[in-house]
Amino acid sequence: MKRKAFTLAEVLITLGIIGIVAAMTLPELIEYNQEIAQITALKLAYSQINAAISQAAFEYGTVDTWGKDVTERREKLKEILPKYLKVVKICEKGKRDAGCLAKEYTSNLSDTFSGGKKLPLNIYGYGDSMILANGISLLFEENISSGDCTYTAKGFNLDVSRKKEDWTKTCLSFTVDTNGPGKPNAASEDWFGFYLVKDGIVPTGTSGSDNWSWVLTFSNNCLGNGPFAITYQTNCTAWVLAFSNMDYKRCPEKLGWDKVHSCKGN
Image 1 (cartoon, rainbow, N blue to C red):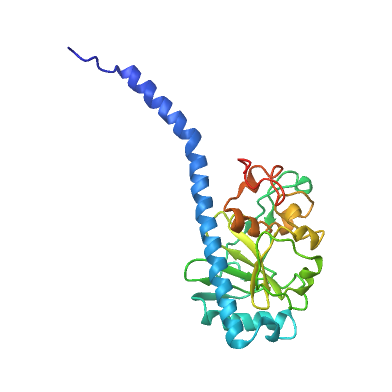
Image 2: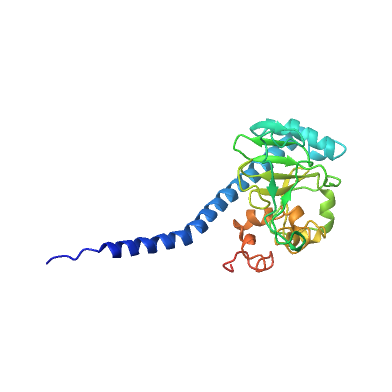
């Protein structure tokens, strides 16, 4: 029995349909794969930096003994960290072309104050930075006040309520760029916030962060529910570490530590 072949028109129609489906699904697939890469890098950074601080605290004493204020602690940190992390380069404050960070960062979210635009974030007044051999960058902030440096990471849990006064007990703040100068260079996409505490590090945006401050909160700075979201929007760190997603980019109105933890409703 003779088999009927496909006509050229049928082949072209089929290829056209495949092309349309690919055009609709590929961008989403690419974005998902990029997010997985950033999530994996963030978890690696959290593990490595936390281990380094813990080791340094064991050998040099806890961070609260490294200096009388945030400036002295930050200088000591630049001296000690390279002994426990593979630091390729340390860049001075304000050096946009030094190679540790991107030349420009943007907010992930927008708000009514920006007219719906993702605004550039000027981070170069914060302090010195360094880049590790694995491509992860660290920026030590100096214009955000820290407290008495007595908070401890021992027994810390990502999904736990924090007391309001805990914010006044951190040693200093720093941010991590999970792929250094590489794109997207956007808050809470590849740029995440942490607190240095006396024996380790704590990610920003924990379940109780709304009790810490009216500005530096998970609801405001991760989900974009306030006017300072574009300024301090690195407070999605704990969420990403806990739930391995960036769904706050897609359905922030559905999410919350006490609500669902993904756009799928789980």
